[in-house]
Image (cartoon, rainbow, N blue to C red; front, top):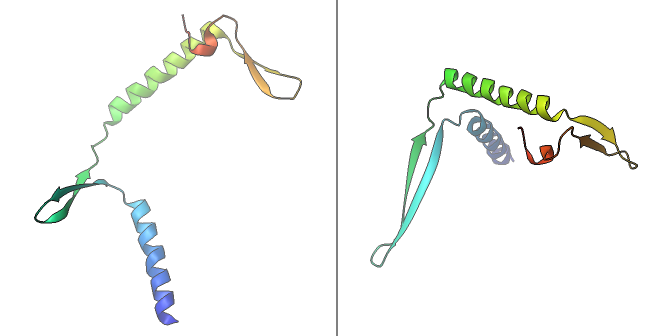
Length: 100
């Protein structure tokens, strides 16, 4: 019974560690050889370093695009007969992403 508790504890610890420290990608490549059979190699690729200034610029550009679309399309919420929320736009084509 003690062995069962030890295995359960190790399983819980290993899953909690693997979810909190994912700093790499695991790549497994397998090839087949007539003489050696199936041969697999595993390699670990580090995640690229994130550029915070670029992320901030991307977020500003995304917000500007959304504000431009909202200013052009002026979406308003309405409710149909079944109570489902629908968006109504001031211009045609806005439901397909048109912003100009």
